[in-house]
Image (tube, rainbow over all chains, first blue to last red; front, side, top):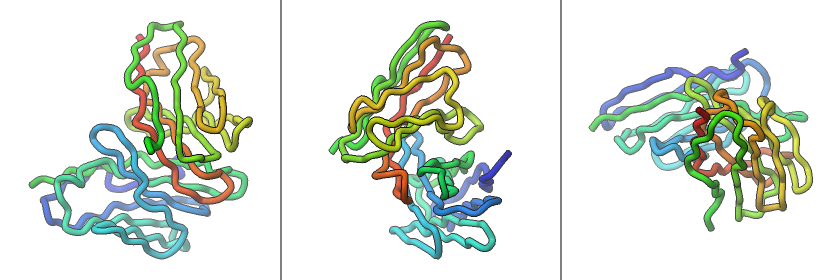
Length: 111
Length: 114
């Protein structure tokens, strides 16, 4: 069963382009996380949100609870943004902080 | 602060060998997690520890055991390694499991079982 669907799976962009990565899910959640995995393998948490919108630098994350959909936007993309972007969900209740992860979106930004 | 550290970074085992992956965090977090990451699949939870002294199975616990040695350390043991356990293993920690806190990840251990 795929509780988390990310799209696209692969994304190639030119430096400066506006990037959108999508995450859809099928059941109610308590929070959604966006993570970045660097080419070297390290994983960093970018955002955690349960409603609305958050912004950090050139990154913007939005979530629509009714539509069960979240987007991660990167403005003025740069080659250093090349990474795998992962959406993860916490389903709440007795899930005790456990996250369910999407397969990730591989982003490559060319200079 | 080092955050979450893992040892070793790389390991090659023969089928049937055992080993322990070590994880430590210096953020005074209550909760710790072990994940595995395989090509084409998302991260999957192996075991977690909501607080010192407790451990629980995650999505893929078979073939693994864990020990929450103290608040800082959470180890993952493979008693008899199998090729299907070839993967990248990540340890993570968070303040607690009872609310929504971000998780902090270690650098990963790349394990190959031949």
